[in-house]
Image 1 (tube, one colour):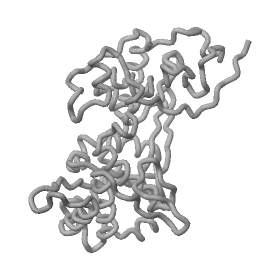
Image 2 (tube, rainbow, N blue to C red; image 1 turned 90 degrees about the vertical axis):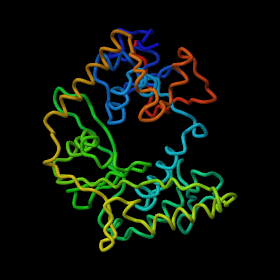
Image 3 (cartoon, rainbow, N blue to C red; image 1 turned 90 degrees about the horizontal axis):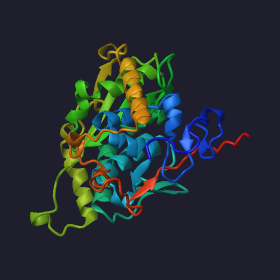
Image 4 (tube, rainbow, N blue to C red; image 1 turned 135 degrees about the horizontal axis):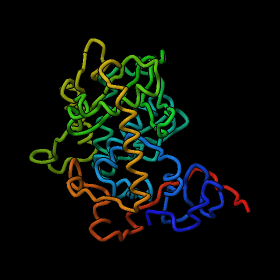
Length: 336
């Protein structure tokens, strides 16, 4: 169901039994209310825009149906990126751990979980390398943790997102990326649209820095065959500390910092709202026409789509594999 089949002509009057404030749907089959989006505006994020441009059907499953893989089915690269991000943008800055954390909170701070998987082994190794080569005291001194932003210009859709780290002066920010090919995130051509959203969220931002961490691809073969996960994690740390410029692009040993900085003037902030407007209109048209195009060229690149199995099985979905995102908003009282 891509179009509301309930009381579709009265959502704005709050008379739909399944409508939830904020444009959500209470039914098990939908996360967002399609009719509300069609009559108003989709709430966009950079990931949502990317999903739609990659494949409209992917956007439908992810953003309207709200489907996401259960943790046990998520890829190791995703888990590694989430856990490293959790430490740097959250725990280091004094926050609480998330579900993706490789840490356990205690009365005197955090400690590592018992390493049971390869992704946990790599995550802990990367974090410990970060602790050794980066001046964490300066990070905490000069930055604040993750910050939510909302952009709403006249005639434009609502755009929301999160800044990983914002300088305490309010004039710069840091975006963290963790992956096997950090150069992808350091190329302005590819990162421009995301940086544009950040710069648009705060006119005071003069610059933004990309922290791209390379995930080591070392294996447990040869003399390391049978190596314990704890020893493998320690080897990850040693390798990264020995070659900080390779694993932390832009690394400066004097300042013990890394990354690539982009100035506000390098980003075209005039064209970006037009892109948002165009994507929002496409989404609304897809809802109106009840058509979500499947872009087969995006199924496997740049990585396999989480929803490929659903498409291959004509929409059939296993609840053992997928779960629906939580709906935070409260339900409205139905008006007679």
